[in-house]
Picture 1 (cartoon, rainbow, N blue to C red):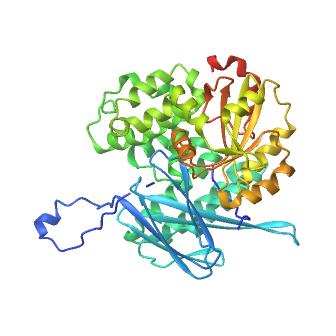
Picture 2 (picture 1 turned 45 degrees about the vertical axis):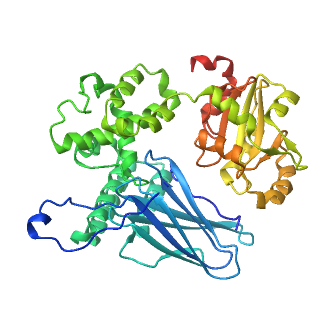
Picture 3 (picture 1 turned 90 degrees about the vertical axis):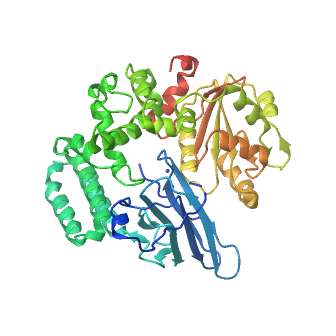
Amino acid sequence: MRFVVLLLLTIVFFSSCKNDHSETPEEEKQSEPEWVMSDSITFKVELAPEESLLLNLEDQYFDHFLLEWENESDKDSVFTTTIPRYHKVQKIDYGYGMWDSIQKKASFINQDFIIDSITDLVHLKVLDRKIELVDQRSTMDITGMENAYEDLRAQIYKWKGDDTKFIKPLDSLKNYYDSMYSKESAGLNRTLNEFEYFDKLHGIDPALVPLDSLMRSNDLMIARSAGPFLVFKYIDNNMNSIGFELMNPSGSSEASNGNDIIYERNLAYGVLRYLRYKDNKGNNLYPEARNWLKRTKFYQDNKEQIDSQIEQLDNTEFKKLLSNIELVDLNLDKVTMSQIIKENPSPYYLIDLWATWCAPCLNGMKLMKKMNFPKNVTVISISTDYEKDTALWQEQSPELDLKLNYLMKVKGENSQKFIDFIEMNSVPRYLLMDKDLNIIDAAFYQPHEPNFINKLRDVNNHTSW
């Protein structure tokens, strides 16, 4: 079970509302909306004994999160989970990896699906680690198209010559799937095909991609698709020329037609992502972008949640919740954060939240071991494994050679409050704080990122970051 490898690329909770398909008079039909969207999605998952399933999704802010099911019984079981619908259209993907100890190589299964705007039930069955759609009418399998574009992207990445040689194969791929999805009912698939095409074309030659036109004519923010990446590339390329100060409170310089509304929506999500990226906070455009975002309908509808992402966490609350999390050491003796700090004094602390099953977590630990780590920063490793995996955590810990290593009771009330406060949706997660538990960065860089060690070495100057 623990050979699962989450294939994260580059990340929902509520009530159900059934669609009404009853007949209506012709005059009433003309005034109906183009689509009727349920406010929730229910996943019905069939699992054999000891089978499990992990799905990758994204919430309304395009943060990754997981849906997880595991059948620990000795008979076939059906699991039902209802989550809120954060997007009109939601792409979900699944990845499973296995290590062949004889062949000494890994094999992977990748599958991708689209949930459209009127689907409120997704019925899945897992057989031999592969997902089967029990009801093909409600969810579309786009695995073939996604894998084809990913294979071509991998070829482009490995190629050391002129990337323009891949334009013709890319055009052929787009035309093939345009033809496959020629029926009117496959319009969503054609849209995703277009997004994938322009995303890969941008990697070959950005000048060939009409990003401005796409931003104004297409709702690009389909979760986990290539659309959001096109928005982010537009922001990166045009931040200096957008002219936020000229835009009126509705989010567009004129905002009088559908294209302006589409542009504002795309731009708002892109600006939020820009504001969340810590390296942009010193940019002189940061205040202008933030002020513009706060005038949009997107912000007004999601003020509390957006503020939590672009404003500093409440330091007093952070200290309180961190001090109360439930921890045990390798002997399973209870220990508090205050006790850990007192017994291991240091100017700064880096909290490493990890799990035994998380490959990126373990890789991050290996990378940190190879670094010339600053002496004024002490790492506190806190496992988020479930209680049933305590023995595995104890068994694996000696091999990792972690100086300060503890297990958090993630199901404990106080621990859960802390997890919710920092909005921890996945691991690894790194938190940087000073000796008085003042938060410096609640979502610090990961070890594979160059700024991880650079910022740690510059931590004494963190107030100017």
